[in-house]
Length: 311
Image (cartoon, rainbow, N blue to C red):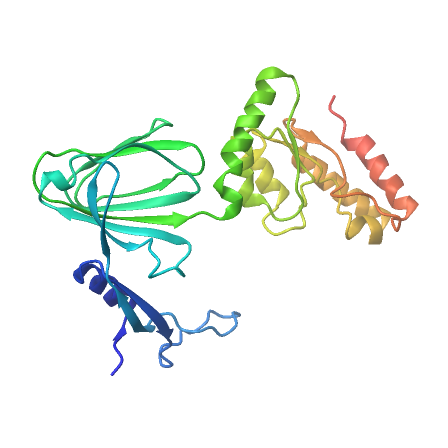
């Protein structure tokens, strides 16, 4: 008879089995369909999924760091289909010889680590100045990215040391580019008067904090018709940190297909939103195409001359 487990039961069983890993398949309980909110489409229930155990893979004994003895459940050939999860290690011993050497300084790149301590104490330090002590019941999430050197060393000389660490792969776009681009932009700013201008269409609201952090000075074209790209919110959140170069008039709808008055109204709204306090260079959202009526171009230009000049 197949064994069925809830998510919580699977996690508890994983720990109790000496870090054997259970690979499971979801089985939906038809009686557990959640009711959608008014106006939402029907959706499958999430409250009572069952998972059928397909196989149990026992953790392998190994060492890492400067000789710490581990049980490694993920990271071998037995389970190769669990990306983005790269490694899952358990360290559990009351023999100081098994853990006292710890994990001296070593580089990490391209992934995140999640550490949970059940017993004992470890100290984390890294090359960007972070430092923290992990004790029983505490957890740490570290995003390594590129270029992080860190250490994890025991803060005890005897007694039980017990915990888990999971390594999670980062998306390809975030493995190296951010720290590398930050280094490049710092060099540009330190050795010239140049400004860094980045062109990116679409819904990039969630990326703007990263762009600010790495040193982008101006963002173009500010496609305010895309999801999450409300001009007032962008100005309020990032107007002191980055220059908006664009976002003057919609080149997909209003400029080619609207009336001259609609063009005037939109240009005025965009300028009134982005211009106050500086940090704004007027431009259309994208290149002006051949189907734009000449009277709409005149309306855009005349309105800009009226309201879009810093005095």
